[in-house]
Amino acid sequence: MESLTVIKAGTGVLTRTSDGTLDGASLVRLVTAIAGLVESGHRCLLVSSGAVGAGVSAFNLDGYPNDLTTRQACAAVGQARLMHTYENLFRNFDLAVAQVLLTASDLQTPERRQNVSNTLRRLLESPRIVPIINENDSVAVEELRVGDNDMLSSQVAILLGAKTLVLLTSVDGLLSPETNELVQDVPDVDAVLGFAKDERGRFSIGGMASKLQAVKNSVDSGITVHIAHGRKPERLAGILAGEKGLSTRFAAVTPT
Image (cartoon, rainbow, N blue to C red; front, top):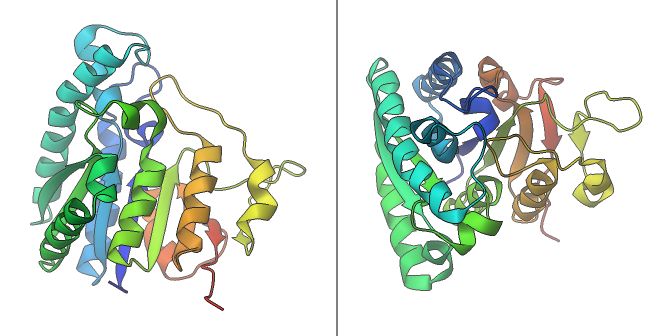
C-alpha cells in the first residue's frame, strides 16, 4: 500500500508525565493533524500507546505498575478510555475509528497474519476510517514484558507495505551526543545505534534504543522512517512533504 503512512504515538506523547492520565490537549492536536492528512488524501493508520498509562489513575497509582497483573488491569481500563477519546475527537472531522488489538502471535502465525492484513486493508479502503492499533496488553504476557509499540508499528508497516513510518516521541528526533543537535538525515542506522539513551518515563516502556531497532527493521524492508516530536504533530504534513529540520529521517534501504 504505497501511499500508506503508519503513525505511532508513544505514551509520553499521549499522557501527562505528572500522573499518567490522558493529556486531552495533546490528543486534540494529534487528531487534528491526522485528520488534516486524511483530508489531503493520505491514508493513515495510527498505532497508539497510552492504554496502561491511561488506566493507572483508576488504581490510584503514582507510576507505571511493576507487576504484570496490575499492568494488564490498567490496560483494560485505559484502552476503553483511550478509544472513547479518539472516537469523540475524530468524529469532529467526520471520521470514524476502528480498534484493532494485536499480540505477537497475530503477526507470527501465517493464517492469523493474513487475517490481520485482510482486515486492515479492508478498513483502509474507506477514506473516512482511521484504524487505531495497540498491543492487546490486557491479555498479552510475553509481549507486554518485552515488546513495545515501536516494533509493533514497524511490523504493521511491513505487513501492509507502507511507504512511511513516523515514530512520534517526546523529542524532535535523534540528537547527536556530541552537539545535542538534531540529526536530520541518517543513511545508515547501524552508524547511529550508539546515539541512543534508553530513557523511559514513569508511564511508558520503550526508549530511543527500541525506536532505532524498529527503524532498522523498517528501513531494511524498504520503508522510510521519521522520528519526530509528538507534542508538535502539526509538523506531520511538512514531514511527509519532505521539509527539513522537522524530524530525523532514516532512508529506506534500496534492494540490491
